[in-house]
Length: 210
Image: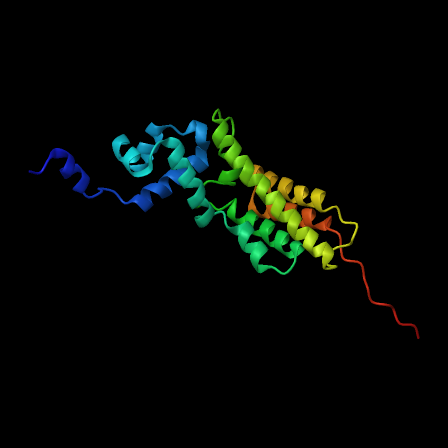
């Protein structure tokens, strides 16, 4: 005997999960976690609440998946720069320049979801999760800077901790400025100024005399 429950389990999903997830990313990115309601999500995702809960769990579970997927689709510029560039300076300069482009791209909400989604958030877990991700960036920056100090790419007296935090301050400030309407060119000018304070390695070659 085929029960109603078995029919429901075997019924194929009537929406594309990846497309619905992309719409959820854009909603949280634009409005933040707190201001995006389940009703908002079902409307933009084009699904009913039962389908949302069945496919993604509750709002917080959906947001956690959104954050992970955002990192894959949009937020990989930091990892990419650190992995592909030979020095911390080159990686940070590339990251800031790519951020100027990405944060002002008209194809999606401006700025960075990881930086802004917990604004005015009453969920301590969500707030702490995003804070931990942002602080992890500082740790990674500092580790790379210290490696360059050890390799002689940066002067021995470079304050790795302060330089790493400076980088984080700049990237977060660029994100906010993008949301406030700054253009790509304006953010690129900020990136130029940010890189101007980076210390240069001391010259180790001995000048020759005639």
